[in-house]
Image (cartoon, rainbow, N blue to C red; front, side, top):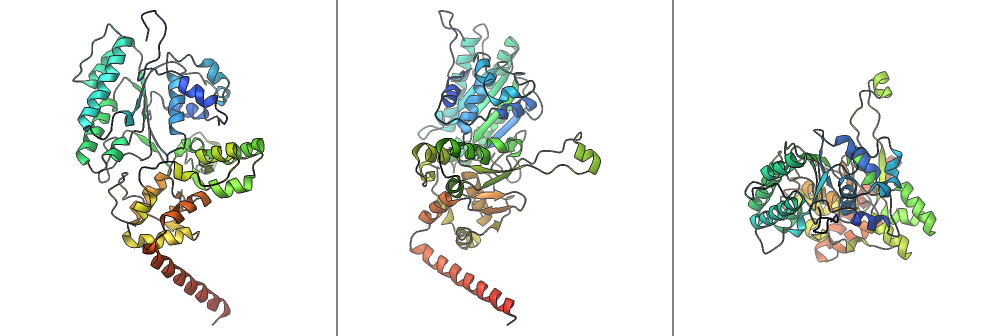
Length: 430
């Protein structure tokens, strides 16, 4: 958009530019994840253009959103910025560079205590439409019909939108018990985004996957990339082993200790079979998925810059305390937690989890939620959960202090001794 002096100005919601991403690039520690844009470019203007990414707090979600705005925004002027990044090593890396109008929304700016969902949505729509009118002053919008207005702006300009929604799940955390507000919000997103010609790419990010009602979702056009199944975005979900090794070399840190404290999130890309892949054509089998061991970016950065290896997880301000959830003793949940804290693994059924923070009807629902919050790792090949590292184990230890856990740990220890004793007798043939 242009100022009265004709100087290009970035908007708050429309074409916010590259400044936020430049700050990340200029930081003391920056891990280049621009290769992610290569994958997003492959789904732009396709049926797979709806991307929902869920990760725990401090796993780089906002930086990725800033990067997307800087790359696709037609007013960002980011060629030199990306020419120095890994993305430029890919073929056709600049295919969509600066080609779209970007709409960037941070939902926590609108969904706050003290206002209704209707008020939040009205404020959001008004602010976006006002900025669009500044960009296209000859086009009038209909304040009562948001999607129709966006279609008018699109047909006026001929430029489709890349829509970036950060903290998409805010309504499920602010009004976690208000199902009517949640439905109103989901209906708004569906009406805004689904099957709209003005959408080139819709990218949502948050802690939680898309809310389900029963086995269905109001936003079933989205492909989900979560901590359970990050799919093609797996290497961009956290810091990889190679990236952390390189940081340890640069900063002179003990890699073995860093690994013990912060490693443990095991994910795989589960890439859909490529019909042209040589292995598939010759053997009839698709190649195995690539597997990655991921580290929490926040903890690694803090330990590198300070030289202090400790628990940084309790500074992530997860919206609910771990203790609150593991206190829900569904189906022997406390015994399951004791097993996990002892280094065990537990197979779970994730299918009943409704992707929110309140509809928890059994042990496996709680454990599924803890995977999305980052408190548990998930092995997708075996559908097993586990405590990923020492840092998270410390969080469990802190959350299980108190008399209510004493009996649980005593029972677990007695059961383990009996098991060990039985195995010893069996080995001796007695």
